[in-house]
Image (cartoon, rainbow, N blue to C red; front, side):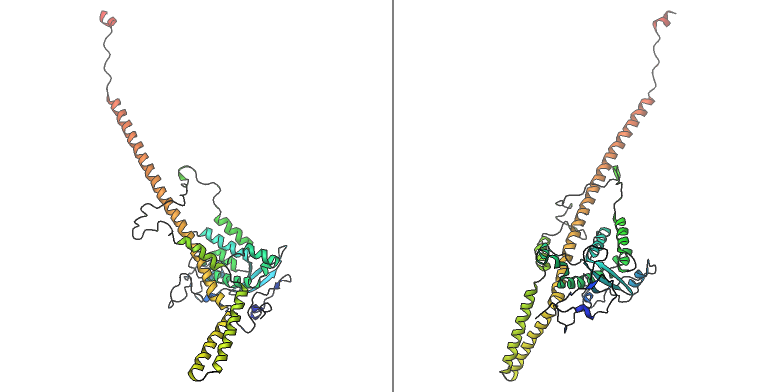
Length: 392
């Protein structure tokens, strides 16, 4: 079975593109199958439950731009990545751009711009869980595929789905959806270079850091423990990330490793042969046994069809990959919160030491004033008359 000649994006509405662009074959499924067009149907993280409605950004009355008004219109808005195009515009080498449709606006962005947007949002909101984006390609992929690594059809299709999920998670976030730079990212009329510079200026630290008493205290060591961490009170923050969190590293690496295409083809071929064998056995039997064997063969055939459509990768491997990325993000946030809590305790200790020193200085000043007043109240005794005065 040949998986290289089909392009699932040919069913999407055609878009006008520059003469320097060309469509890229980005999907292995056969033409008889239909890929899900809305990967955003997955439950948000954390999941609100099976009976909860999808969470939308809170409605507001003051909008910074038309894209902000569209996101907060109260409708079930959805951002779509409708195509992946190979282009060499403003570059010496070709690259892949993803066409984003948000309402009536269409924007083009490459993977590095998605990454820059997420890094900037992380710097702007260091305590928020910023949704992840698909992982970068490994050096092994570049070594094996060399110049064709960036044009891998399966990788581009996976990035298209997961980047669409990334944008929709931000659009449904109650805080990130209000960020004007995100609105500029979705607006095709605004150059992302300008938006990237604006965001960089917003997160740039001040040129002259505060000095003296206003200077920030030194950051705590990573092994520092929170005071009273052995018996945390109810409602108190966790002392440090639990020891079980480092175990996620190995699981994350195993899950994030994309499955080999040959394994999927062999898996589908085995189920096709097994289903055909069970269906053949059903012809040799009669009655209920024949019907049971036939239903078993149909179930195996359904597994073959779902494997051919990459349902296992789209509906299981990709969400699991995404949630393991969330686990890594939450682990970093816990470490950040732990360090900030230790830094708060260090600041409180330094402030208490300064208060004690101030109290000692005030006590010394009061003692000095008391002595000064005591010395001033002492009247000088008259000097005794000299011998010359007595002789006169």
